[in-house]
Image 1 (cartoon, one colour):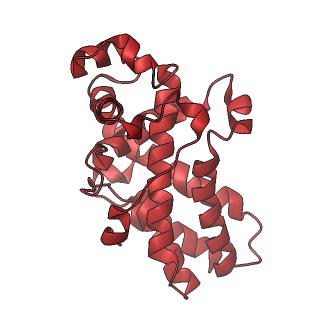
Image 2 (image 1 turned 120 degrees about the vertical axis):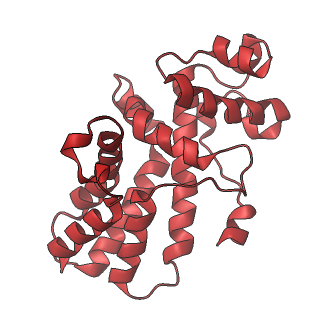
Image 3 (image 1 turned 180 degrees about the vertical axis):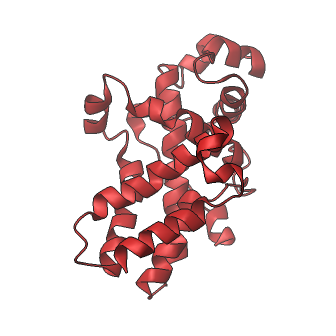
Length: 223
């Protein structure tokens, strides 16, 4: 799978950027350092001015790539979910046993993420922390319905739909496949958030058990 991912070219919704950042050295630098800076100071404190200072480039040069920081964040989260979708496709395509396929899918969306050396401009380990801390901010806005119509969250929904399809393979009669799949993905992010900030109300603070927990829950519901 690693060799296949090394040749991966992730395609992002063109409406999220002014100029494709992956087509230039400056654009790649913007992506790399925006991830590092958001992780360091948080999205609220993040500005294009601070990013420009970090990469030693004019703030205006960043606006040539992204209209605003919200679209940059949606771009980064879309990149993450696209990367996750490819990994899930590679991991499950040749698996015939539906339960094994579900186990693999759950593991991918619940485990701790390590950096993928195949993408030097994106540190997936750090980006996954941003997903845990900041992803809901891309959704919980007044513009979410319009942005959904524009396809901003299409790849995120595709990841969940892959899990929905697997759940239906495991148990075609289960009536809540959509809710279960979205709960696995969203719930895992929330559990990781609790582990980082509200440790007393999650077992993840005691051991890394997100994968074990959601696998156990899904099997008890479906089997």
